[in-house]
Amino acid sequence: MSGREDILERIRTRLAARPRGITERRAAVQAHIGEHQRSPQPQPPVDLVGGFRERVLKLASTCDHVSNTREVPQAIRRYLAERALPGSAVCWPALATLDWNAAGLAVEARAARGDDLVGITGAYCGVAETGTLAVLSGPDTPGSVSLLPETHIAVLSCERIVAAMEDVWALLRAEHGAMPRAVNFISGPSRTADIEQTVTLGAHGPSRVHIVLVG
Image 1 (spheres, rainbow, N blue to C red):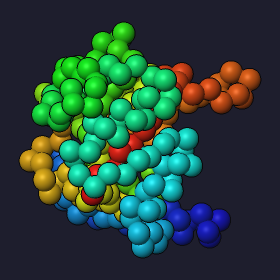
Image 2: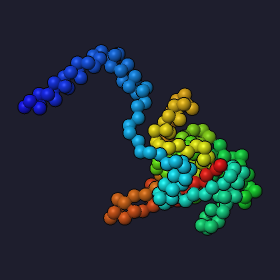
Image 3: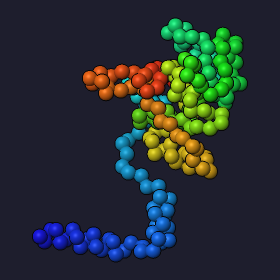
Image 4: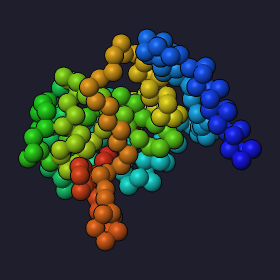
């Protein structure tokens, strides 16, 4: 009983120290959120790009590396040709200025529809710890392009690879005045093992994820 009373007494003490009015309580909550405290984290890889690529491959995605954005269309054409995938795709309006025609690709800059087979997007950043892409929704970055087509190709600058998930939120707070409507975290192709514990790719989204690193 002494242990029980000790625990209850500590709870009573903590509760007594809390603000009692709704205004004070709301202010206390906002102050706590504003601190953005981080929990303990593992040591990040020394080479963020190499660590990201390693994790990406373990997630059953594929990865390519080009030196600049002008090489992106040709890299994507090679990827599609090697897998006998169609040379037509839909892309973010933000990527419309790339010279898709010179690479022999028919790419439309718009939101994806149900019959689009290949979707090409950028990415806000990548997470080296998990091989995850962070993708923001917006007028020039419609979320459907990464979700509806069976093949998702993401173009990511090496300079936008961060160590951990917490760094994504820190970057968002530093670069955006307000959060976008949606932040999608993509870790490899969509998969499920709900049916007889058999892993199936593409159950709820793309069955292929290919990342083109730039830089």
